[in-house]
Image 1 (cartoon, one colour):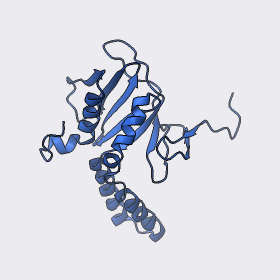
Image 2 (cartoon, rainbow, N blue to C red):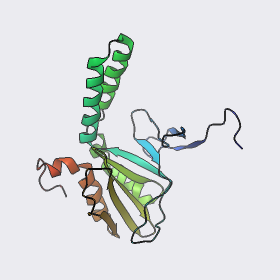
Image 3 (cartoon, rainbow, N blue to C red):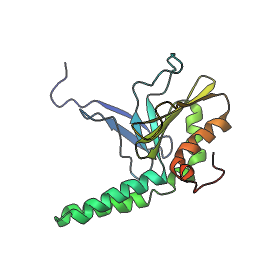
Image 4 (cartoon, rainbow, N blue to C red):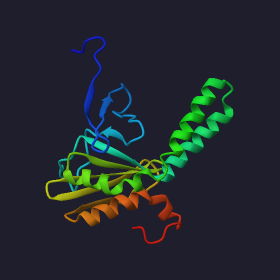
Length: 192
């Protein structure tokens, strides 16, 4: 039984900035956080099976947003701001756009530290590529695991996953999905 006013929450210290993070569950939504000018986090409660087997994984994932996904969000907010007639709401949207613009390049700039955190196995990585494409990557035991998913964009017959003992291969998997749309459009050569 849940008491009135009870709010399910997970609290921990951010492994990048050492400030407290609180993930609060909202009914009908995921467990997510807005963590200032640092990274955001998600709770992933159930992972897909690999070849019919369950692989242990962390509960909390660091959200790595690609520049493509950030630009995609900015474009959506700009369209909303153009249509918004109420000045206060328009200012909030413009403030959100500026905050997002400051996040461009953040994942790439902090990749070394983020990969060190992922190596510990305490946190996984959720790479948000954009257009509904994302990949999860984590460490379980001596192996690094990765799985890419999409609601619509990736071919249904394709399975994008990795299981490796090599941190270099793990890093390549994360970087590939961080730059997925740039690579897919041929804008970035050699980042795979």
